[in-house]
Image (cartoon, rainbow, N blue to C red; front, side):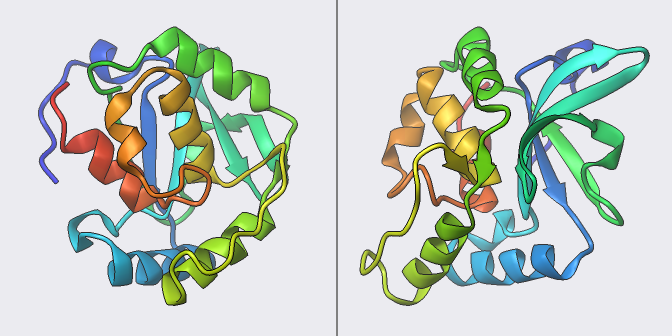
Length: 177
């Protein structure tokens, strides 16, 4: 993945995406699964979040995590034991619409059913679809936000609700900014 040099004020903007590589066992399992299905250049990412706001010298993110969709975590805490990369929104995505959408999801539950459905899809594509409304996984939240923001290349994903962080990375970094 090519990272272009950007000024701090261009990279750190509300609505930009945060691709994360954490050190835990769940993160490792996600990356292993992503290597099986996607272009392996993008399989280093096991989580995705959205930059939300800068308060008292700290950036806060919106993310779908085990406790649900939250907006109270600092960017500095997003990838324990690992690293993260901030990528700007691709051309064609409306920043304000993306932020409005993901902020409206704060408080929704995490979608464990979507995780299981994505795992089944890896072995039996399109055989089973399990998920509930008003629930999210991290990449599904980012994908739906991008779709709401009018980012058309995302429409080529097979399933916006069970896509992976690697798919988000690929779709958002393989297009011009």
